Length: 125
Figure (cartoon, rainbow, N blue to C red):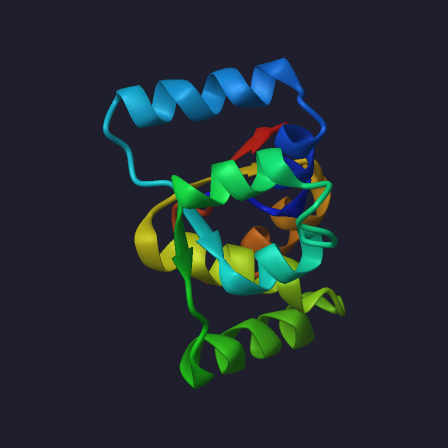
């Protein structure tokens, strides 16, 4: 699973993140991106051609009311206000996904605030 930092890294042509992406695809892995993460990273289709290509190879996960409620409750429990990070953690736990993020401290704090064991596996971008 990618958060906005992972998408921005690929949009900025960070080779390490592109390598991770291609290895995942070559291994047949499903790459998840919650829809609010796309909103957080997307600004201009004329300048984000690379990001557009990345998204074509990802499964963009729509967020329904139950996931939205769970993410909001997680923010309350963790004492944070970044609902997009909370959505990332909520969806990652639902799917058993590894999270690639530029913000491992916030994702880790949110994961630790859940009752889920084990928590989210986090990889720094």
